[in-house]
Image (cartoon, rainbow, N blue to C red; front, side, top):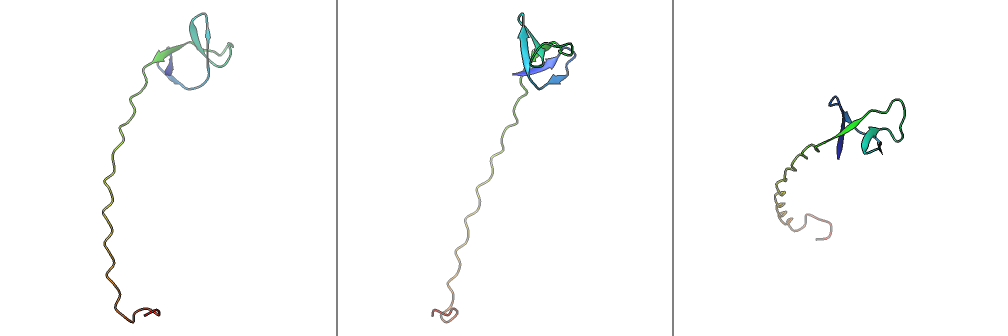
Length: 69
């Protein structure tokens, strides 16, 4: 749930309810301002990544190319 001040400025932080009215701040102080509920912003859709192309198989090494041959 998103909150905004009465002037439309978004608010993120603690809130408290006093007599069915929501105010900013954890407790009522002189700096507390009235908040109104705003609709949540739509979440951006996730873009699906293309699957990685399969790796090509390595060609076999010729005989004698390694120490174990």
